[in-house]
Image (cartoon, rainbow over all chains, first blue to last red; front, top):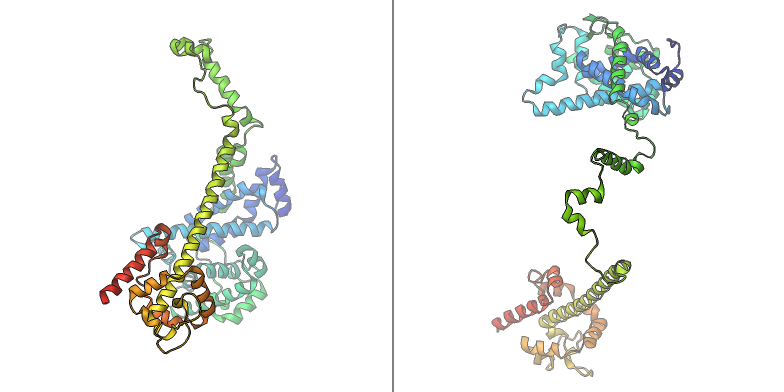
Length: 184
Length: 268
């Protein structure tokens, strides 16, 4: 029986064994679902969208984990899939938006403002609006550093970008977020 | 929907870094604004597993479901024939026997080919084709070489023509070679010999009397005195035939020269 202390390496081995495959998959989901969900949710905003992206990414994990070459950690690999899936989702939404007459319906800021709890006067909502105003890459970097407290080295593997570029990106992002909060 | 956990920066290094960039953000550690349905995370693994099981049954493991038994394709034709034979088994006929029964006239004719080919035709065919290809290539090379040679003469003629029609007063002088027309130097004094060629017709006749060797010899010995600017000024490039014209017609250069001659005649 797998448990919380089972290492990623053991989970991968169990996944590759047909007799323990499902149990290992379940354990991987339990272990990482929340972190991955929030990573995705902060990018796509809406819960239903985040749920779709998360499920799609886990389906991809099921399909591909047998071939995972273990050149990176499982956690990094999962983050990379989640990031790619989120960006693909956003990109597809933008394409649909380009075809749509009502652009506003699909914007992240609009989604935020549509939330039943949205309160423009509260700082935490302003922070989210500020983050949504960032370019996608900066938004990813900011979220991974600010919320997930991910070391730059790890982030570098997830986003396939140099640590120097990530530091610069985080710096710019934090400055922009601060400016947004102070001016709104 | 339920609001979850507070976001706090726990890593002192990350907090210190943020304080350095933006003290406002470093102090801003509030609650999560996003909410998720009650029990979402507790139910997710089970739901995902159900999806994975369903997809396993259908097409998620495409690599495996698309695998074919060893030797499948090698035996496919036999299998298909076997099945077809089995379908006709009730009739207990197949192939020629079936044809004979269904189309007695065709069946009785048999399948002997009535068309004959020369002996050894198919054995030699590839060699014949290859030989034709080689021959065609060789002809093309010869044709291109001839064209290049023609072009060299044409270019030389144009240069000489332009040079002489525009500057014979400064270049021409008599000499000791067999054709006085070809003898020029930088002498700026008009030469009585050169004055013989003061019309286009006289010039063309003079040019025609030159041998290729004389033209080439002149260009080799006096190339340095060719004034590019003068040549450019006196050759109307707009009227020059296009390079592609030479490729499609050997007459292009002749037509061009005739055109110039006509113009000169009109001037006179």
